[in-house]
Figure 1: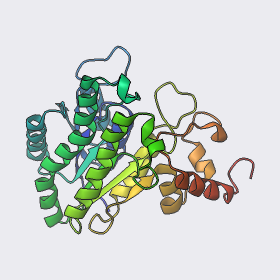
Figure 2 (figure 1 turned 90 degrees about the vertical axis):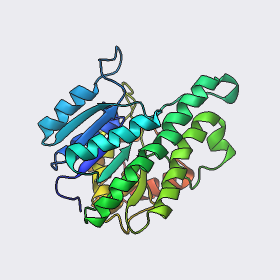
Figure 3 (figure 1 turned 60 degrees about the vertical axis):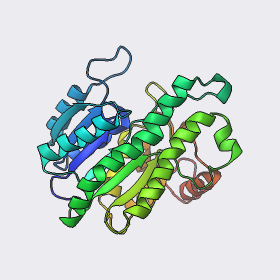
Figure 4 (figure 1 turned 180 degrees about the horizontal axis):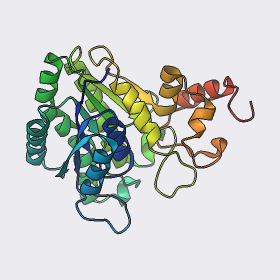
Length: 290
C-alpha cells in the first residue's frame, strides 16, 4: 500500500496524464513536486506548474512547483534535492514528460531527433537515476518506493511494422521501456519499477478518447502494490483495471466521451493486447452488444 503522505516527483505534470496522476495521489494526501517547463500560460495548451500546484493543494495534497527542463541533468539533480529537502524524501517517481513527432527518418531534423531522445529516453533515465538514492532511503524506511513510467510494452512491438512509421519517435519512446526493464533488474527487491500505457488515445480535442483519469486510477493501484515484489511489469490501463480491480465495460465507459465501440486506439498496441481486450470485453455482459 502507499506510504502515509507519500513524497512524489512527477515530470510533465502541468497538464494531461501527469496532472491527473498528481491529483489522484493528492487525494490520498501526497506531497507532490510538479516538474515541468510551463511557467506561463501556453496559447494553445492549458495549465502551468503553478495552476497544477493549486489544483494539487485543493485536492488535499501539498505541492512544490518546479520549473524543469529534463534535458538538463544538473537541473534534474537539483530538483530531486529540492524535493527531498521540502518533503523529507522521495517515495515515488512518475516519468510522464514526453516529446513526439511522428515523422519518417527523412523528415526528422537533427534538432527534432535530439529533442525526442533527450526528453523521452535520456530524460526518463536521468530523472530515475537522480531519484534512486532517495528511493533506496525510502525502501530502508519501509515506505514502498516506486518508479512508474508511461511508455509502451516491448513484447509484440519490436518489429519493423511497429517502428517503421516513425523510427525516431519509436527509438526514443522505447528507450523509456528499456530504462524500465534495466532499472527493474537493478533495483529488484527494493524499488518497484514498472510501466503503463493507455489503450485508448487521449489527445486534447479528439472526440474518440478517454479521460486521463483512467491512467491516474491505474497508476494509483499500481503504486499501491508492494514494490519489492511488483516490478518489471508493463501494464495496459484497461487490462489492468479489469484484472486487478474488477472493472467492467460499464465502469470503463465512464472514462470515455463517445460510444464505447468508437474509442480510438493509441500508438504501439500490439495484437496480443487487442486479443486480450477483445476476450475480456466479449465475456463481459456489460459490454454493449454482448
